[in-house]
Image (cartoon, rainbow, N blue to C red; front, side, top):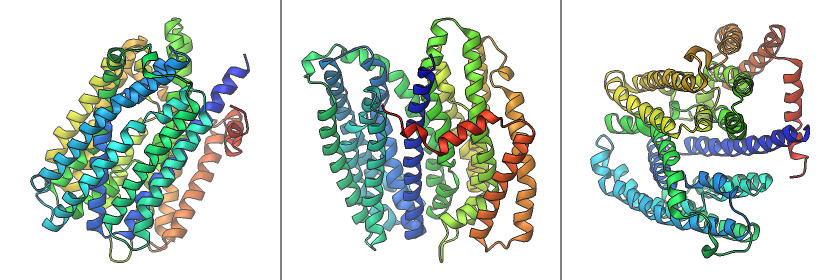
Length: 507
């Protein structure tokens, strides 16, 4: 009995570790491009990457996620057959994604009315290369999930980290050497070619022998399973860019660049609830099937509480250090991003709601339609609110509109989950503990922020950042332990994480 939780913990450790490392690399790409490029060039590369990601999300739908479900139901050669089938499906959708990117390139002058003609011309030249990147990259998207489904967690982690490093080297490398955006996009195209070939070789080595005719899962079965989750995921990811699209249409390129910097949830914090949710979902399903409602609620509460201990204080800290953080990451000689600070602070208030992966519990109850409905509801609310708020108040208004839309959708989400759990919305989360962590974080944040503003000069960015982070974390740890928000068991688990014990075990 004792080995099962340990195994689950180790797998979670590997998954979370890889997600954090790849997130840090992705963040390094953003920081490097901000530091190297002018505001206009950064807006161009940001737009190219945004269109590419939207197209990729449009094409992958739920097919990579279907690997987890169907690999448990087939064996031997049928696993390879299913992997081949998934790749063929994604190759077809990749072509559609490529056509979508080409369409955006064609209509760019009509979409970017406030952008200067030279920038639009450069976007139209580079987008076809991004279409090629999408066509090569999309069929490889299930590789991480295939490795996880084959119980090769460490290989999955290495795959994610290698591809992220490759992206960094071939995109940022040319820019750091003084080449223009064109060479950087050529490098990104080379990354896609290397990823495609490397993924094919990797799958040949790890999958059992077999051929497509050995398949046990029909295309219809896979499509019926994948599309509902895929549409939900697609809408969620499109929602991440809905407000940015609106800013790109209604405001100049410089405002878009500022909003691109400000409208960011701190990514390292954001991955925590999603990574933990991916580990716990199987337990939720098992308890639901066995009708163990009390055990399900206990595990749900415990997961929320542990995630809250990380997400809430780190989010409050990110809001406190916003000015120093953006100055360090984004600003350089002749480039000022102070206008991005307030949108960043407003935007990160949304993270205070992300203390769990809400979709995992809804999926455990089989409510995939609910997952899709909530995603659709959020994107509609975001668009409806963002347009007038942006027109009236600029990028600050866009951030406020996004916060209001997320808060409204959060309440609806809690009500829907409560309907499955036979609980009122205010009992769906362990709010007494949540508020205790939030109160402790705010109690510490006030004097730390005041001390930073009064006693350290605004230009002393590094000193201010180091001081604020160190004092905040120290005071929160002390205060939370004193108030029994943090327990001895929490400290023991934190020590195990710091020592990376999950990497020392055999798969």
